[in-house]
Image (cartoon, rainbow, N blue to C red; front, side, top):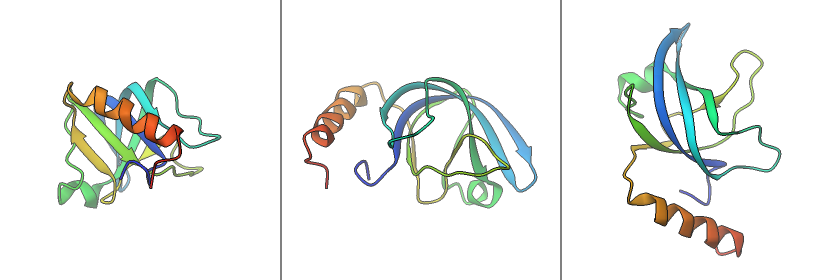
Length: 115
């Protein structure tokens, strides 16, 4: 999943708000492990957009005041600025032991070993 994702981040979810058929989470990007070229992804506060239908099936399951590892693909929209997660995204609660593993994935990608 890491190799096929456009971005891989550690984020802390600060708030949740419903906007039309979407749920907008305000997240604080703590660490960026991977991002696509030309990406405007940066550390700090950003929005993460998820369709309400995806949250109903709990794919992904996101709660306020929790930290998550998020791997997903970039998405451009004039209506919603920020990141997007869907049922194909990987959103799992963060474990501090993963920091070393994520750095290892970064090295593999750097040396062309990402498949």
